[in-house]
Figure (cartoon, rainbow, N blue to C red):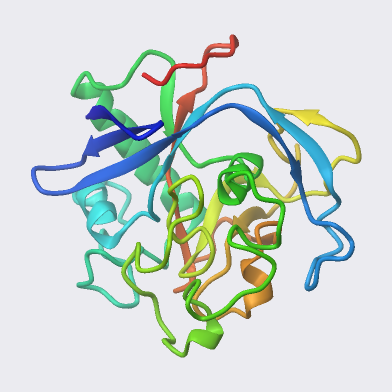
Length: 266
């Protein structure tokens, strides 16, 4: 694992095995408006705008977790899970899909254990799923429009139903958002840490989502969904056991066991 500075952002490169690595970008703390304005086309009734302050920076995967990355971590798992679950196997650079939220927890446990054993896990830090707020903050990347590139979507922007591709594509085939993240819109839905619930009506700090419920939040839309589902504010939710060829994930890395805010990435 190594941290390199690319432009203004720190990039963490996690070596999963001798040939497969995972790039993560540092996201600075900040405040943003989560949700969508009532005038936004395609908005859902559960997208009430509210101000969110994130007091801690965090890393987030530059790309969705790929088939090769998932296989590198999950090979040899004792949970009876396939290391190659995808509907279109043998495409190492496509996002892994057909993974449940529960499967992702096994992936994260194995990744944290491997990094801990190798002496590469800073004290108090863990690989995690991003919270819903962290995900939207990184997706928007300072923008306030329906998508990180503007108010409307076209097939040159992302892989979605109108693209006519009808399956996943290799990660990074479309332009990155302003903070350098690829495929935050489209390709596969991405699991987040949070349980689904109603948004608060007032400002919140470091929200963790609903405190009870049966469904986990998905973000970003997917290859066979209409463009409105790719909006930055769009919320989807299913049972954490769900496995579909439209469901993948992106890994976060953050300090979870220390309360003080920090400003410098490890």
